[in-house]
Image 1 (tube, helix red, strand yellow):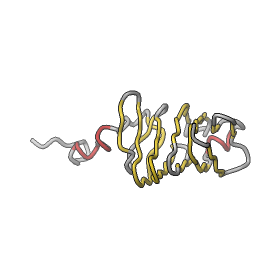
Image 2 (spheres, helix red, strand yellow):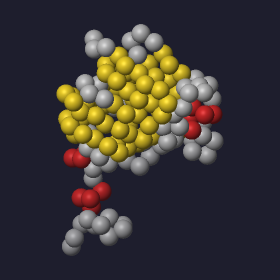
Image 3 (cartoon, helix red, strand yellow):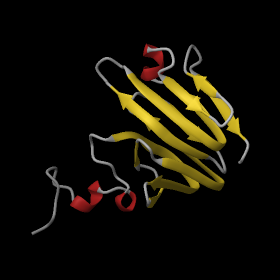
Image 4 (cartoon, rainbow, N blue to C red):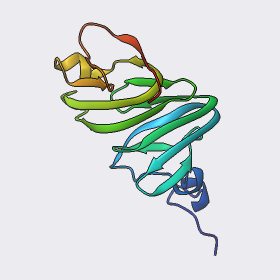
Length: 151
């Protein structure tokens, strides 16, 4: 008997990037573009940051060398990380009915381009990008870039 999902596809196709898939209810974003060496750190586990990998709250996304990665969140916010960047998805909650939620990402080093989504549009301060030196809160700006020198 062949091991298939309820849609008739082989069950192995339901897994993403060697186990980095998150269950449907707890993932917050998905990688849409990945180039070079991109790693996801989830607790003590490490995964390849390949296209299609779903991300969870508290994941750390790291680009090495000249790598880059782009991800889209459940509220349509987007983060794009440049080379030698490290970002922690510290807090993410989103209600797709009311568009209310909270989004905190900490940029430890590197460069990030942010495009705000539904969360930032519903409440001032609901989306924050944190750095070692500053805190940026989503407001009227719909996109901005952040650069943090390595520490």
